[in-house]
Image (cartoon, rainbow, N blue to C red; front, side, top):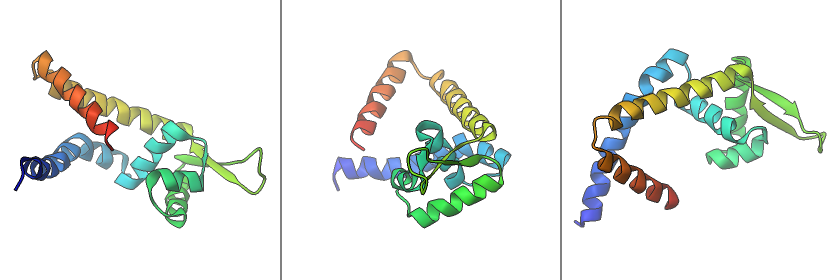
Length: 139
């Protein structure tokens, strides 16, 4: 087994632990699923956008994204917006409630990372950031 395989195996174990520690309490507090939160966070960056575009960004089928949006709309996190250029098309965007959830999650993520990183030397913090940037570039 190569060193890369060993590292990949360990990262595969560690990343879900990080995700659970960072997000589980938040998900429970807002009573939304991970997919619903992912949808809200995607819209926070990309809205307004068409449902097909959102499905492509999230790598799910249009009917699946429509179901997610239907549920989030009932919960008042998103709204459908008529497309000004194409009367047949509908865009989707966040409501104020959805924007507040996105802002709250970003604050939670930042605060969690700040707490974790504050326990590391500055050099390790910089190295971690450098490596994470490289990982994102390779996605």
